[in-house]
Length: 171
Ligand SMILES: CC(C)(COP(=O)(O)OP(=O)(O)OC[C@H]1O[C@@H](n2cnc3c(N)ncnc32)[C@H](O)[C@@H]1OP(=O)(O)O)[C@@H](O)C(=O)NCCC(=O)NCCS
Image (cartoon, rainbow, N blue to C red):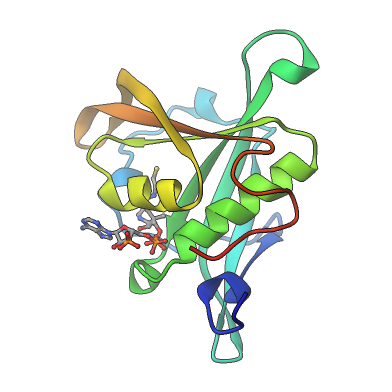
């Protein structure tokens, strides 16, 4: 893996409890009124750290929360989310960060890692595809944001697919 690629320059660190992740500007994270019932105490957050010519810069954040498809341990999937600050988008960072988080979760024993994204969010669809995720279908009318109700695509990465745990290849 060449040292100069984004893969070697992207890492995830656990977000300290009081740390406010960098503000993102995106129609896909402009929620409008947030329902307090959506708060999930099991949600985990990481910061995306980019080695910018030797300086560690926080360029975004990622979240993960459990989704249960049945009452058995193996039925727990993890749904991930991501935000990269505008000035660092389009450099491969989102692709690498999602690969890293899927790998980290697979290493914990999670078989299914999934991500959902707006049907119009081409950059995230590209990043998920490059990260090795598989498009599964569309969830109709699944999400309301400030701009109204939207259809979401669902993507997943299963343990053992495409690349092995602990090895995250460059696209
Ligand atoms: C979606 C997001 C996480 C992707 O991260 P990123 O670091 O920009 O992703 P990458 O650089 O790895 O890949 C982005 C891909 O989208 C492409 N892309 C970017 N803008 C695009 C556009 N307007 N139209 C089409 N493709 C676009 C890039 O060219 C690249 O694909 P390529 O390598 O095939 O050329 C980031 O753009 C972001 O934070 N967006 C705002 C928040 C958001 O949408 N989060 C996800 C919500 S589910």
